[in-house]
Structure formats: structure tokens, C-alpha cells
Image (tube, rainbow, N blue to C red; front, side, top):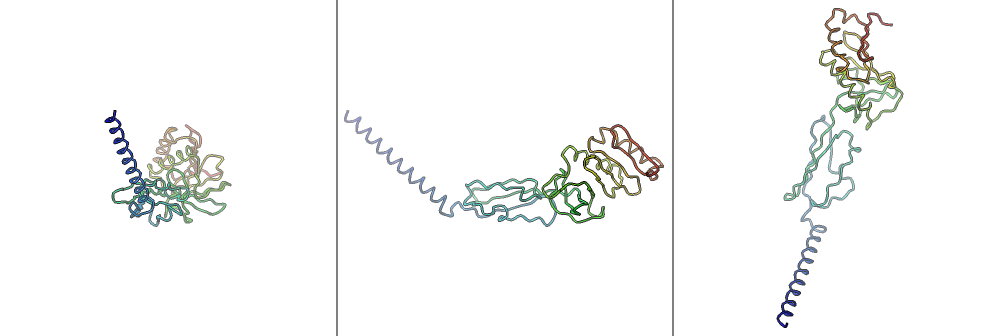
Length: 253
């Protein structure tokens, strides 16, 4: 019995010693974590891929007044609503070197969207998202220009069309590009009509609807046939706003 009690006492002593060491180590680790520069981040590198020149994104922009004390704390989430020109980002940490890399993907300039009422123009990406102000353009020099006369407010951070309509809008543009039909500008008079007028150089005006894909309806084949005809430059307009139907006119009403 005496030997057993001594053995239990010895185990208890070692257990106490182990617990004390564990507390000391944990306390030292917490102190180093919170109050020393042992885990402090040495560098945050920001790289912006794609987009256009002139985009700047600093560490101060990303962090603001939010604390980021060391490499083992979660990196603060970036609110993309504050940076509409950024489409997405990823963060990678190197714990040994105590560095952080932020890889941001910038939005691409696809169209210039001008609201005629306010005379404000915006750069729009290939999803229809307005992400930056754009200069007034006569068309052709900076890209495709859309003149939107509809009575609505569009600004940075807005989508210029619902996603399904914008998808068809882009499909219409792609058909014209594939056929090498030069676009002077695009006009939208009333967004509720869900249609647009494409002004071409040396050819007719072309009316498209946003409600269907031009390839599904065969509009691409119709345009190809009309383009190859001798009357192409004589047409006043080509109306493709009705699915599976096309109307042309040699005279302007």
C-alpha cells in the first residue's frame, strides 16, 4: 500500500509540473503573439492583374482602420463595394517569412455606357457592371459607346441591364463583330422596350431585342445573307426585334 501511495504522489507531482509548464508555455506564446513583434507581418504585397493602367490599391486602402497585428490573425476581408474596379481577389500568407500577398483581378473595360439625361458616362465590364467613370466619346476611338436615353439612374456599382438581357446584348455585338460590321454607336431610347438600335458605318441601322439570343433565332445567318447582297448599303434598317423574323426597308420612315 505504501509503494502504491508513493507512486500516485509521484504521478501527481509530474502532472502538476506538466500543467505548470503548459501554462508557462501558453502564457509565453500568448505574450509573444500579442505584445511582441515576433509574429508581426513584415510586408503586404498587392498585385493587380488585368484591367488598365492607373489602378492603385494600397495597404491603407484595404485595411483602413482595422487592426492586423500579426501573421496568425485572419486577414481582414476586403469590401469590394469600396473598390468597384476590382472583380475578385485572393490572399496568401507565408508564415515563415511573415509576408502576405494580395492578388486582385481588375475589371476589364468592355463598353462605354452614357446616360444622355445626366451626360454621365461609365466604363462597363463584360458582365454589365459599371465600375468607373468614362469620358464622353464619339465612338470608335475608345470602344463601343452606348447612348442610353431611358429615364433611370445608373451609376458606379450598378448593372446596366439584367444579366439575361446583357448576355443577349453581348451576343448581338459578337455577331456584328464576327461579320465585320463596323459599329458607330448603340442607342437605347426606352429600356422598357428591351431593344436597341445599332448604328453601323456604311450600312443600315440594325434593331435588336434583348429577349433572345441572335444565334438561336438565326439572326446571324440573316445578317450574313443581307451583308452579301448588293443592297446592303441601300437598306435604311434591318429589324431583328422579333424572334425568327427579319424585316428590311430601303426607305426610312
